[in-house]
Length: 478
Image (cartoon, rainbow, N blue to C red; front, side):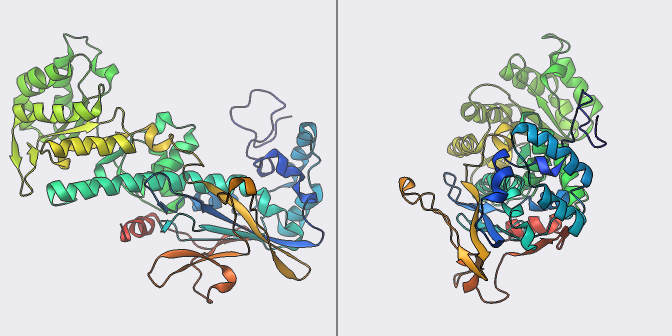
């Protein structure tokens, strides 16, 4: 029989509720309630990025509040438990029915855990904990590890996308300062093209919101929804009318110029972008945009953004900018770099990732082209080409309370030669004398100085963080 909250896409009457919290863990964790030492009452765990990702050695913490919104309130019900027990029995496990029943009966289905974390948007070096979690009911010591799957997933993905976006944006801003003497408009220089390349709509929405911490350009509407619903942003990002190959090739080779003209006519004002490589990119620039349509482009109350979409972007982008300068002219700014006519710009969206963006900008600068001429559309390279190992994210138990005292918990495998040694004891974070965030045992941090502050307790969100504050925090020290 289909449960009330069964997945909307379920096709059979035997469907189970895909949103049942009891299902959202790794299967082997179903057996862990029997594995802790006798007398265990509390477990303290932490989440941290353990290592740098290439040249990115600082991480922007983001995304936990999205998960807390899902964990708040009554999240375990009798219906869920009655459904999960027989379903998981056929999977090979007798689940901890008594433990879940205790959460339902004693806590009204609310999770008895305390989650403490850095303020979202905080930039910290790798190897600094971002989250600490422990149970608040000694009967639920097993729950901390049970929640690892979803908590770690929530933190690593959003924070990794946010950190990647932040790093790329910082490289763009740095080079804009060098070539333009200003970062005006930088927030629109890295546009999120990643929705269709993400693993799921949920991933696109979370990753899209993470990017918007650093920039204001996006085509991922789900990210805007998350930014509003979870973080209170009125409108976190913006986009513009743009073509794709299906529209620009709809009239065939002979009709391409007419399609471009029509695009200009139906968009007489504002910024618009047109993919221009459907057949012959340089012909489109020379004969269409810079020829038959040149007067219309210059007469518009707005900017035409030309989009090449094939070839080696490191070579193509400077070539396209140079070709547009021939047709529309340019100026040389005070920094000695050339800037296109204000009516024309370029966006590169093909073959774009953190490495190619740097290579493209270096090639432009070598030819005396200002970075203000270009914007980038980043798709799979922004939302998909990363994983938990990019920063080595992990959630580890570091302390267990039993027998009236806290005991260290850690691993130190000889075969890993120190690369997988985990922290021991309850973990905390504080600022050093130099102002940098550093990991410290919680017991060694003065009262009130721990940067990990309470955000969730017993089913209630304790601190609601707003998007504008997260943005400001992320760029305070950038």
